[in-house]
Image 1: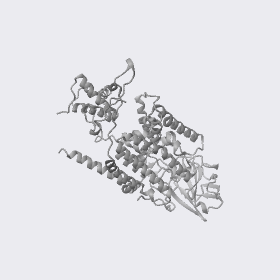
Image 2: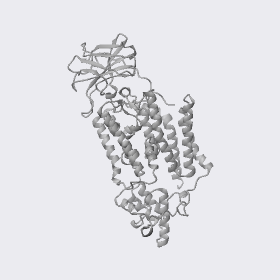
Image 3: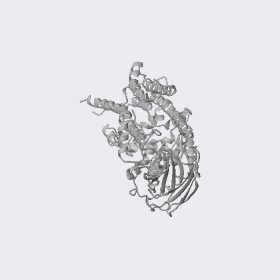
Image 4: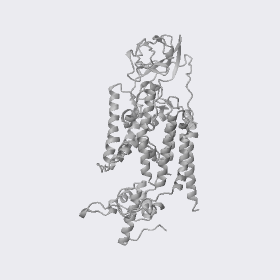
Length: 189
Length: 389
């Protein structure tokens, strides 16, 4: 019985080393797929929430996201709704669009902004609310996560703050949603 | 130094090379990806890093002076990681700051320090409060899943050794702390060691309450040498000021004055986190009081006042156990011959014997104490404690 303990100990040590070697190469993909399968998602305050509807325009599309509300009373964002104009390369030099956010057939906001060819140029947006549930934006850049215009990837993103916590809800069921293709995750050898 | 001093017995070259071989193969495997990158410079950098790491491991094994070479490795990692990281950021973004566009696109590299803060929101709402990406993408390979996987593997395999070998940031402090010859501040109240727990509890709860990574937004000293939110308002300017103050205070000035890793010891919530998650009864050290009973010791046989107090207060920990077990002569075989007389502290009437002056715990010091205990026992005629029958 005496040598049993060291044998078990060295075996465990060897297996641990083997696991250490294998983890980054073999188990990492399994682990990342497992994490993805848990359904975890990045906070919509950062991502802007899921796309609920798309509006086709000549040469480009307008994507309306689900409105985002603070998850806790202390979260330092005000409710907002994100609207994307994509692809940025196909946009005309000046955008002046009326957008129907909730799919009721009536426009909810009028957005105006210039689209400079230089991707690093600073953007400014004017948003005129056509309903009482949106706040106006005048010459806004990107002061905060809930009120901004920014070029993200191949889109121009505008986040319009809402006036109430419980205002209108963008209706995902009224209009078909075209899923946005995502790039496949990079795999490890 | 006394003439009785003996250098630790070093291993032979062949044996050291054999012991280094598995690590060399493993390191080669780890660097295989970097070696496939086209271009001479990346290959050269990968080879240099490979040889540097493996050589340090060989020297650890050969000389048995683990801490010396670990410190070289760790300080180098600490000082060079920001160089590589910041270079990559500037190449990709043009600056160290994170623009909002990158956050919205989920291109913020995930840092392991965020893990304690995302746990409760993720468990309660399924939401990760970090502007990164769950899975690796071409624009953000440092994804949340990958970093959590690496951290989990490192915690399970290394435990708190992560703080000594794996943390990207601790090496800066360790390097700074190694520079001065003497500590200017020697006494630090041990209660300061509770601060990381307080910081950990505070940031976990505040992150849940505010749904934002509080530590990253307000308290992380290492934003100074990695990345931080773009300064666009008074708030972000204050945040950046806090990052700079904490960095220079806790990572530069205090380590210089105390010769300790002050940020790690007295502030870092992540240092407390692995301890918190490792409270598994199967890996917990036995209780010192039970160990005293098991070893059939009487209080007079305890090595010092500290150990007596530890047993009396019911504390548990590797240090106390080590202190108890060294009474039993259970030190590693290879270390029994390295005892030396040590130094006599003070002069003239204030001189104290070496055994009394050695208080801190550390392997070589244990041996010194044991050596002197043995000599003191021989001198005083107290019988040596034997193994329990």
